[in-house]
Figure (cartoon, helix red, strand yellow):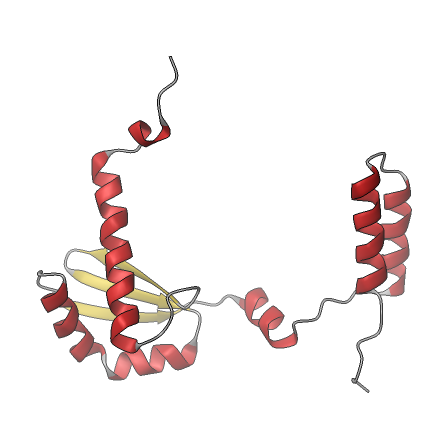
Length: 143
């Protein structure tokens, strides 16, 4: 007999996820920032660890951590004892955000095209060929 997927999730786990969602929404509301890919809060023993990949946001949060602690204690109707703000390194993500360009050498592009020729799936073969062609073009406007 097949069980629905939601039966496999324990009630405590589900409640914990809702608690973290609410915590994220309240922190975003406090700082007036979007919640997507900016910070990740963790709550343990009435203490929040706020992880972020943005050092500017971390600095802002550190300056306002006491106000944030009071705000969250009031909103969540619980006693938040403290907040630790930590910057996590997402090195590859930050490089990709800064450059927004993905380039490969002409040698790599020719290897990709060679590999694509041995693929039977027409759509996959064309996608890899297009990727090799697009990724090997020189970046416009850079000297």
